[in-house]
Image (cartoon, rainbow, N blue to C red; front, side, top):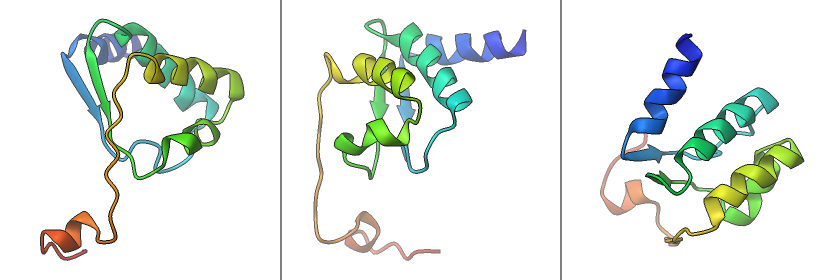
Length: 99
């Protein structure tokens, strides 16, 4: 029951922000959970994916090809991409030292 409650919690929030999106590769189980969350939020509420990884590389990091296609299908269509590129990292730009 706690798994379903957790999924419902992620489904209900008006804006879900996934920071450090795909910083590491996902296991098939993690990708499956992400697919369930993506499916339940699709075209009903907003989600922001913040990533250092170029969107062209997301497919490989999601692992299982079929699940990756399903997740990306829900993310890519009807989305806006804001690409921020620069020579200097955000931490350097704002004088924040790395820990």
